Length: 201
Image 1 (cartoon, rainbow, N blue to C red):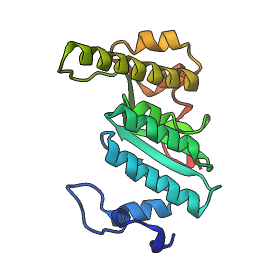
Image 2 (image 1 turned 90 degrees about the vertical axis):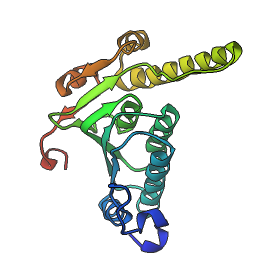
Image 3 (image 1 turned 180 degrees about the vertical axis):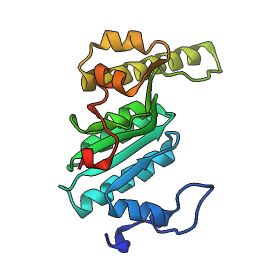
Image 4 (image 1 turned 180 degrees about the horizontal axis):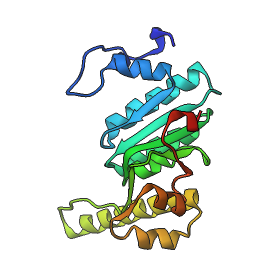
């Protein structure tokens, strides 16, 4: 992959606050691998989206592997990453390596059906969105409606990708709903549990 198409964040060889530096990210991109290994926010969304677009420009047919280990975070950024994974032309496989929780679940589900894997000791968490609310009563009502819209969108994605009824997803995610890998397979989140790379290559 030519350095000329890589933005500055992917070229910086320095480590930043304990996170993999741009040099490491560049090497991963060359292997067509992306990491979602932090809380979901706008910065992560920008990094993942940039990586996806660069990889599509490089080769729109070769598959991309996304490793997910995230406690979740900003729902809008999670939806954006899910949309970007679906937007790009190449095949996408996702591997949960640790935790896919909250906004991390739609990201994991951004992988193609049949190509969503879990390592043996991973966990999955579905739950309804929440946020701290302050302000006038009318503003609180608007915020509450928006939270419900986010919840419905989240549940619709999980329902569509697992084949389970949306009402069941809503009921299950009303409180923290934890799934071990085999439970996630039975639920329809995960296609297969894998222990080594040879099982997916």
